[in-house]
Length: 241
Image 1: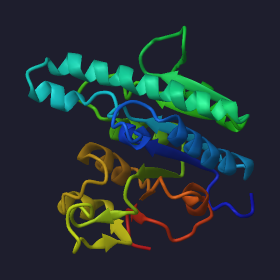
Image 2: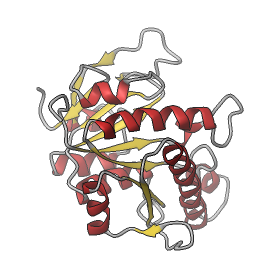
Image 3: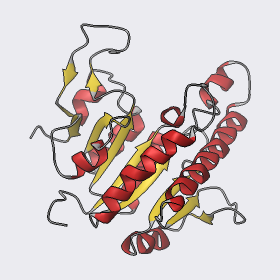
Image 4: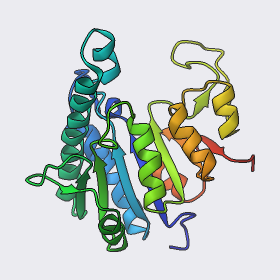
């Protein structure tokens, strides 16, 4: 593992990152690409866990804003994350990567319940652990679930995989003059109201000195590049490097 800067990481993938041209559901080509990148990292000896969102199927906050009970809307969103976790598991196992899906909602026919010690043991055996179901509670996002799970498994860093190549002062897809940040502190993210992760997740990372790297998932080799310490994306940490 000489080429790797990290031993254990948590990869956070949004549900939207799994979308294809159809704009809905899971694109097998995209999941296959993600799986191939994860396999590269596993072969380097790195232990990797994944938290996946559900926005390609359902957004609880939007449904709640349109009149649905927030608890119900968020529970539907948790189920969406489980569908994505199973889709990613299938893509990984097709290329020979051993996996386990653990959910915060009991669903023993399709996945294990989340048990921290069991998750850590799976990682030690070089299995990819995919955490689904968020935190198991309404009103918490999968960003917060990612921060929580990363801390529980003693991950060294969160990899926040997105559709852009880092953190900007405004949406780079809408504004050509958007400025990219190479480094930020957790408190700067909160004070500038930058949409890296939600404020609860950022605060949790700040309080526990857990860094985050935000990068473009669609660029092949980026996960391996970040693992090797290359300057990719935006680093969010307690203090500037």
